[in-house]
Image 1 (cartoon, rainbow, N blue to C red):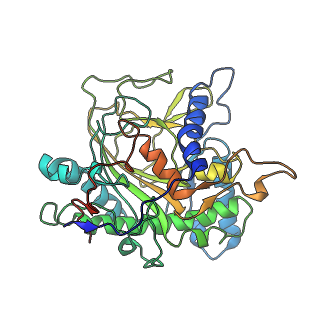
Image 2 (image 1 turned 90 degrees about the vertical axis):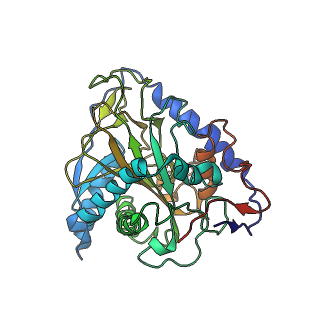
Length: 390
C-alpha cells in the first residue's frame, strides 16, 4: 500500500556532509595504511560478564564500566555475556534472517528493494551497495526503529535519518513470510533495552552521570540488518596477513553510530583490523554479543574510544547469518566532543555533526554511483512505493 510523503524535502548541512564523505574516508584509509613497527601488544577483545550491572549496586555497575572503558581504549571491541536477551529471541531472529534469504521469491524481494527507500531500508542485494568499493557477497534486509517495537512505547517524537516522520520500513507481507514481523519485534525490543542499558555503562566509563545519554535516546536511531553471507565458491585461507582481500562478504569499514551490538550464527566471519594492519578473526563465546565502538562515540570522546576498522569474510563451507544492531542517539541530536574529553584550551579536531544526516550521508556513499537515496527517482508525485507498515 502506498503512503503519501507529507514532509518537506530535507536540506543537508554542509559540515555534516563533508565529514561523512571526506572525513570518514580519510580516517578509514589512514587506518588501513598502518604499518609496522606498530605492534598489537595492547590489542585484545575481552569477554565481559555484565550480569552484575543489572544489580542495584552502583559499585558493581562502575566495575563493569571500567572493563568497558579498557576495551574501548584498546581494540574498540568486546564481547558481553549474561546480557538478558533471551535465547529464544536470538535464535528466532537468526531464523528469520535465513527465512528472508531463502523463502521469499525474487519478485517478492524486488518489491522490498532498498531502491524504493530514501532511507536505505528494505532488501539490499549484494550488487547494490559496497562499503569499500570491494566485490561484496552479502545479501541483507534493513529496518529501523518503530515505536511499536520499543517496549517503552517511545515518546512520539521519532524522526528518520532525513528529518521526516513517516514510517519508512518496508516489511514483507504477513502471507509471504508468516510470523516474520512478530519475531523481529520480539528481538528488537530486547536488544533496544540492552542498548539503552549499555549506554548508561558507557556514561559511567567516561566519568559522566549514569543518565547523561538518557535524554538523547528517547526516540533513538536503531537500524538493524538481517545479513546472509553465502560460503565462498573457492575455500579461503584461515588467516591473512594482508589488509587487502577480494572475495569478501562486507568491505573494510567503521560503523557510523554510537556502538553496535552484533549477533551471529556459529559460522565465524567478523575480522578486526589490529594496529599493525593484520586482521584478527573474532570468535565469540556462546550466547554472547559482540560490541564495538562506532564513530559518534569516537567523536564524543575526542578519539579516546576507538572506532575500529573491521570487515566480514566467510572462510567456511556453510552460510553465515548475522544481525547487527546499530545504536544511535535521537537523529535530531548534534554530536560534538564532550568537554570532559578536552584539555583546557584544546580545540576538538572532530567537527560537530547532525546525527541523522551524518548516517544517511554515509549510507548514500555506499550506493553504486554514490548519489545515494536522496536522489532516488522511484519517488514520484509524493508517493513511496511498496510501503507495508504495521
